[in-house]
Image (tube, rainbow, N blue to C red; front, side):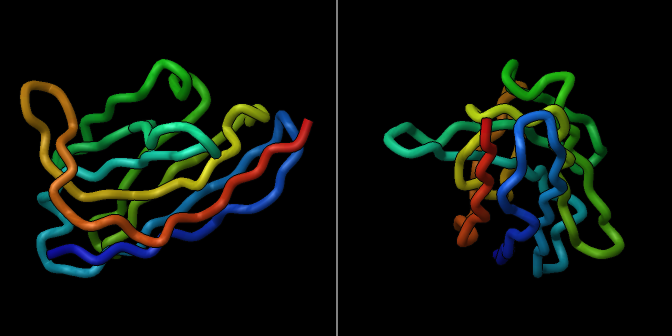
Length: 121
């Protein structure tokens, strides 16, 4: 079982950037697909992006062109570089381990505690 700790959130002005990190424990990190989710107040948790063990990536339309997901298997760390942030990106961001089924990300592990991202206008 992979345990996850997110960090890197904060308060940023619209148009700014943040890089989120997700430290993972567990020797199978390198072969798991990993994803970033977010949950805004009053809304359902949504998948923002995922990356396969082979570093193939897929993004939600809201993130495409602005966010970049990457992974450092040597250090068991997942990243989300977020540029050109908008107020609607405000949410708690979570990472998750999982697998890809039929081209879609399927979460198979527990949630971390999340990290708050707030974008002011």
